[in-house]
Image (cartoon, rainbow, N blue to C red):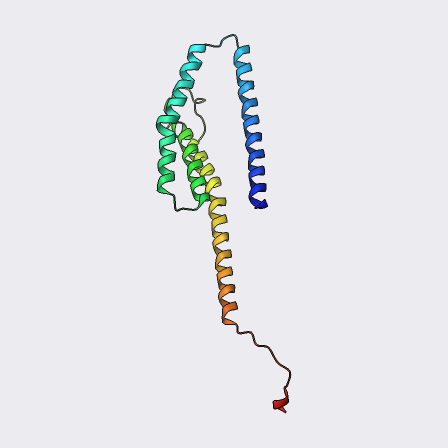
Length: 164
């Protein structure tokens, strides 16, 4: 019972920390926008509306669909898939190179496909390594358990009056 209470307390602390950090980042962005004399409010509202629409119309259905398809998979696999999906959606326009001007080599100058591959490897390598280690640990525990069941424990009794 206390373990669940401790976990809830830690989760509540992490939640408060994340909310506080997010609020500070938002306050910083708003203060920077207010201080900018070249701010075009209409453009900002249009951008935020497009981001919200893209999130609700594209990203959220993909995440919910992936989660529904993967209900029986390990939670780490689901988390790695969601993070991979988010990273891929953000990097895809850069990888495809839309907007790249051949006359301007400084526009989109990096090999974004290789960078995306490196990030995906950085997401999946530790996930798969952890799952492999956990699976091997589970196998070792099953092996030990089965060997314990095979071992017959005998007790040596002292000689009795009829042994004599």
